[in-house]
Length: 66
Image (cartoon, rainbow, N blue to C red; front, side, top):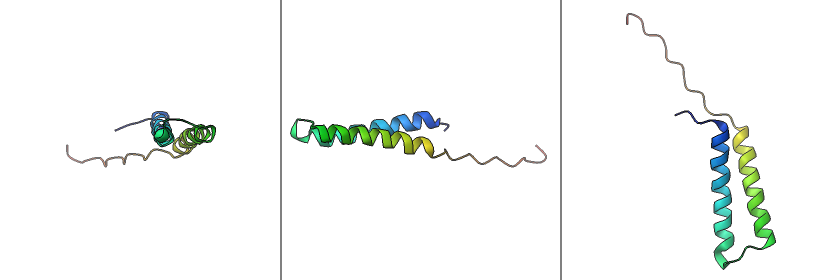
């Protein structure tokens, strides 16, 4: 499966932001600190996931006689 590093980063950011906001909404309100934590989680997920390269698929050895 080939996924670009941009889509990988977007999915990671959405997951981090959603997880942070679900925790923040436990008491039915989002404070400033909780909102900033969600923003930092999204930015960290974007940056860290984008920076890590995707694993390269191994090249198959040429088969002889076929």
